[in-house]
Length: 507
Ligand code: XMP
Image (cartoon, rainbow, N blue to C red; front, side):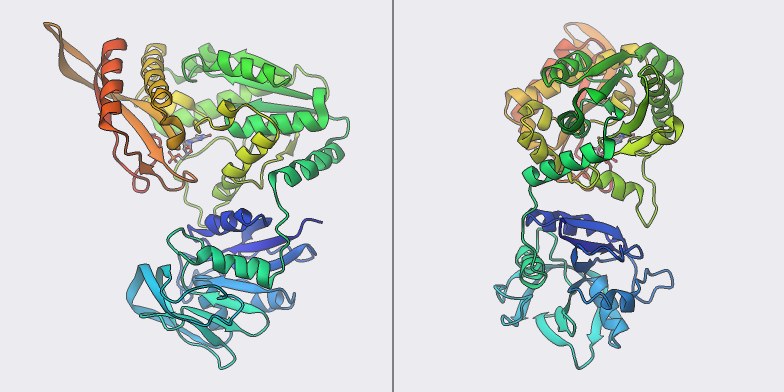
């Protein structure tokens, strides 16, 4: 049985990061909503309570059933809101901080003899982000770390319970990994045996058991997630897997052809379907971003459904859904920024059982699994690309001519990134076709043509992103090549917005 740590999610933006850090320690963990602890699961070795956007006194604040969790007798670590919640329930008090504590602070006191604080130095930087602070704790609690401003920065409570008011999971907390390691390994006794190879072995075995001789279909997108899912399934069930790769007409230049060839090399059984004409027809005159997404999502489902029905006796639909997709779509605070079409829709329509072998992996783990499976590096390091493709990078209505212009410009940008050795340094890059025309001059001629924006970002998980600080000389070369080489474009701009407040895609 794979031992695991459970992270109870109280809605903090950094909950996923806690999960990633624990996995980086080669320890398996799962994030579940604050009120969905898997009682009865004997493989859990420890519990972490995350932060939250709420104050513990907020009427809407999420509350877990602490007595029931305590009764499990497992080690527990509260982070930020989690720490405040545990302290409050034990009879301590939490009050609004005189000033909102946000950003870097340094530990001015550390109890180095405490198991959670072992190896953590006084003076280490930690990251604070809270509006409330713990002002008193019961006598049975011990303060194990303080900062100048926050006396109860960390406490040890009875019954193997600890709380930290700062965020050990964020990169800025210098001692963060040490604290998480102390908790997971030192206190919970984790064996650190979770790896890409162990994941492949156990998943292939589980898939064989789950699927038996059943037939499975899988939608490939060219992206790393669906490709890794396909290769993993292929290893488990071979020819019983059929992959379908739909060209909705809004892929990158030559992508359909190239990716199909890659898949064939990998020994996958792939059906390529060129449905671009249907999609262009449905999208004619549509300018609203959400409608475009819905049309493509629905169109994709229709085409896929039609093709899948040509295969006899299919019982399962496999998808390359990964962990952040699940967590984002189940987000307990429930704000929809954009409707991604990867999760939902298809299974209901097709009446097939769903198989998602990567649903508990983070992106970097999916890549590690792909490498371990021997997939070529260019498929594994491929930038993420949105399901609706270039449709959400053409502002306004979509026509085949606009797609052609964008494909050409995008090709120059991406090829340039590769030639300059910059491709792997950015998280993702692309070009956006703007719905504006501007005056230019070429030779002796006045031009009145389109503007494009280049977008390149650095990120670790797409939840937040910074614009990539690409060299001016590179940008100059790309701009020249696009304006000289792409008919219909006479102006190139560079997008210098980070996420938040902007998003990565423009629509
Ligand atoms: P945003 O624009 O929300 O994008 O900052 C975050 C990441 O998700 C990708 N993205 C999508 N992926 N279907 C997808 O499969 C979609 O509809 C979609 N919209 C955005 C985006 O490219 C980035 O990596």
